[in-house]
Figure 1 (spheres, rainbow, N blue to C red):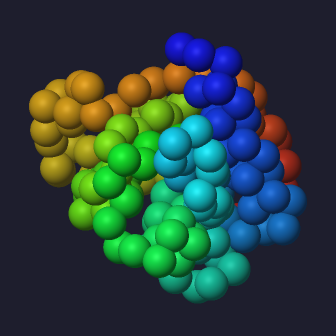
Figure 2 (figure 1 turned 45 degrees about the vertical axis):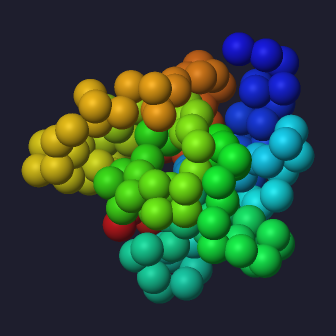
Length: 156
């Protein structure tokens, strides 16, 4: 992976840390990138917005769509701290996101108290998306998850 890819994940981690610090939700941050530039940012806002769909990826897609003035994010990649749940995975597909780069796995999400594993068992098929889902910087994202787990937070 190039240094730029790691820099984009670092930005997703920074976005997640904002959400953790402000008590907005879980340790999930994301950035949408087009042509080597960040065009959208978001972090988990479930607790802040009282909206169970306000995941980091969805927030970043909404921001990118607004910034670019389009619902079609063809040519964009998304960098996210946790492997997307099925809702976010499908949102990326609906937005025509080219590739998803993620840090922590579905199993890692479950370790810190999120129900992703339950839904992953119900809705199989990730094995068909091997070129679409790319794991990077897992160590840095695991540190983020550890920091979240060790800080006061609300589980949901």
